[in-house]
Length: 83
Image (cartoon, rainbow, N blue to C red):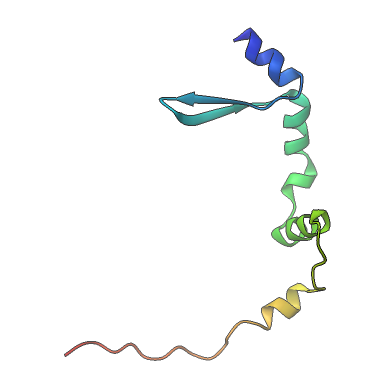
């Protein structure tokens, strides 16, 4: 167990498994604090913008309002049931 703690302290992410299934992840306190920071509590649009900024290609300039216009606001058709 001490070895795993030292690995996490050095910056490695330690995956703990039980019967081959991941059940926990051990990270350094520094990484934990980073994950718990205000950055991790942002809304989904901020997360998308951050992801787009880190992407290696150009994204079209879209706003939440523009994306909302893509929604089909027409009522759906009535379902038909077999006789």
